[in-house]
Structure formats: C-alpha cells, structure tokens
Image 1 (spheres, rainbow, N blue to C red):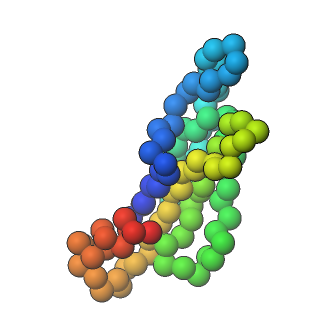
Image 2: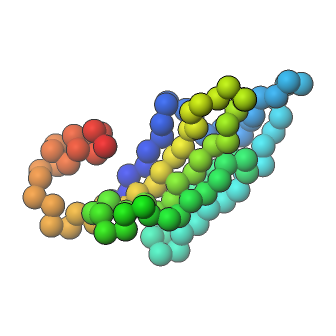
Length: 103
C-alpha cells in the first residue's frame, strides 16, 4: 500500500511567487522502478530516497522537500511516498486507517 503525505495543506503547483509576479517553475518527473511509482514535482524542490530506519514496517520510497520561501521561513513543506510492508498486520482496516492518519 502506498501512503502519500502532504503537509500543511499545500498543493503542489507549477507557479512560484516572486517580487515581480508569478514565475513558472519547471516540473521534474520522478520514477522509482522498484515500486513502480512516479510523480511530477517542482524543479526547486529536492528529492531524498534515504530511509532513516530501513527496518521499519513503513518504508520511505521518496521525500520531496520545498526550499525555504523567505529569509524568515522556518518551516519547509514536503511530500512523502511510503510503502507499508504490513503483510501480517493484525489490525482491521479502520484501525489501520486511524494509525495512518495519526502518523
């Protein structure tokens, strides 16, 4: 099961604001052949495919991280694509959903 995360209710878009107005940002294409996952993301974002704890049940496939928007910006937005290897997970679907939402 793939679990996409989008933080802070931001939606990926193709426009970045600047002082002179709206500037179009090029989109890059990400593809992971092992998990057959693909996604477009803004060229200003970085990609991380390194799982911090690879032995976890839920494994990171890719994380897309936005740059800081201003000098005072203290929070970065990000999107994660994860794979849950819980083949022998004992919870029912509602418990699983509640765990995913809480995570």
